[in-house]
Image 1: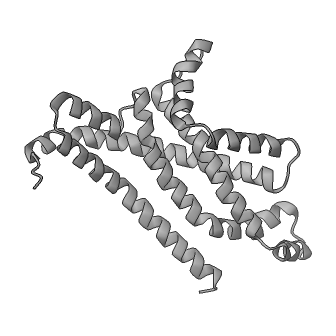
Image 2: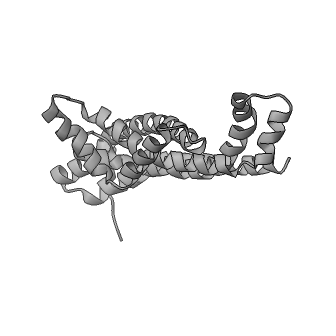
Image 3: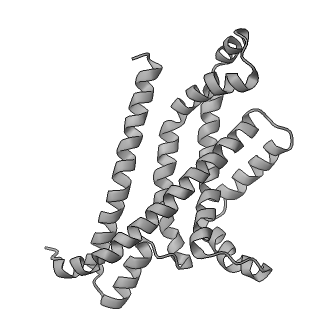
Length: 222
């Protein structure tokens, strides 16, 4: 039977609270930026905006086929060689946004392509211009379809935020490894790590399931 040193857990709890806030901060900023990048790229590719759609496709292939750790190392250790110095937190946000934007783009593109041409024609027939058709007809339906994938990508990015510990960002995994190295309290440190991620991920998972449920009800007119 595993026994935990609760006194030790209580003593290091403030460090995990601070690390959890850092993980949340870097995740939330990255997710918001990734959604914006993904939406823009999906529009460029779906509507085949000349030149820019090719750039978006190259970006997606590059992002999805290179490890996040390598991207972070390039930003944190490579750019200073070129005279560009960026702190670890900012590098983490850029790296997660770069990775997440490509996954969000595919999620949004699937949603945009799911909208029937008849819906678009109907919008145009009542006098809506292309921007209004996108705003009032295409995007709401596409978003409804994309919600499950967007939610899954949000969970993915939160978990991937642990990789930024490799560039000295004091988030959950960094603190866990630091405490294990100093105090050899592996079980307690891992227990707090798992607990912290559950506290972060469970609400996101529940919210995603709720939004997916609501979108399905709305699509059936309930």
